[in-house]
Image (cartoon, rainbow, N blue to C red):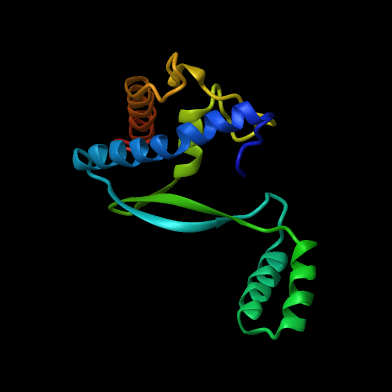
Length: 164
């Protein structure tokens, strides 16, 4: 799930960093893939709240499809029902494949690790890594690149190898 941001100032800093961080993540992945035996593809995915059952996912998916052809009165009913159900948020995964091995990496989680200090998926509230913002409030491009490169390299180092 997307991290919770505690205050408007932190929100503005996160907005400043997220797009550049995402671009740097994608570029550093490309560089790693150029030198790696892994083949990568990107995939849009839906990320559901952790306790969402398969039945609820199917219901929400069906209601969203029904909404496309619903008359206005039906659409209002569908919206009211959907408001009471858990909704997914869009995600973006890097799917890596080598021989019979497959690994999926959540790119937004990787971006959160870049943008937030000591980020983990279990974090209740996050703090922006202010070392990525310079003294005039702009992105420190070199620090952003260095941190992103290090995190992407860690991902590739942690992949299963032929020796396992």
